[in-house]
Image (cartoon, rainbow, N blue to C red; front, top):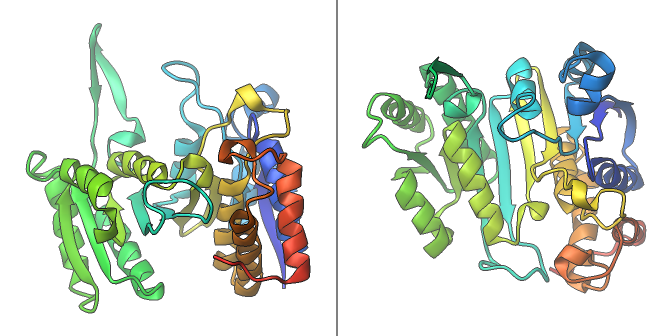
Length: 340
């Protein structure tokens, strides 16, 4: 089956790591036609908007996009392109698998959990304004609709992937109405999945438990802002954001992306690690039903990690982005199984 996929190379190291990932995915034999589009600063310069309609239309038409990292100015300039994209496409579920890779030094080499983040509302939506000079108000919006559908997606994901427990993360002891609503919706949905254990953790305790005993968690369901913070915390437990994939799922489509930044300081040097965007590409292949190709790419990647001779500099090796990609492509070609 032929797939048409929207490709957004992104900023900084984005074009390099996305190009490497495209080569690896194509080596798996999947028939893909790529439609390349731009967002963010590049789009602002060309179209006068950071979210050009033709890019949004392409994703709506193709239902799937692979996106490199985008630059977001801090404290000034245009608002987050990622937030805008999620809003415009109603990509309500942010899925962040967190699994340790072989031969990567990290605190928890056996860690395997999934962070499921509501993606459309809460404080992270950026609804804020100046009340009077020196006073800014940010609005936290929590709805029954959004809370219910992310909880349902979390439980459905757990059921489909053989996960045993889903944990809601909240601050309902203080924000009794907003987080209270989120928690109520979670437990209402849990009734539909009696075979899956459901529990909850207050956000501050959850962060402590993740650092001390992360093995107690399986699938975490969180509001938007908590999910943003906790997903990065979890990435740190396995070696960093360069090893963490991400997927944004909604009714109108799905966007698979590297969750790390655009790293402009190393852009163009050919040393960036494409693992995060590659793993996001593997999630994309599974989403498309290309399970065999996804398995082969994943096995090849894991074998390269386990071998340890062709790793990028951030992982203690000296391989370039292209070297790393070539090593994985070679493994796909030989059909070798990962030793991890």
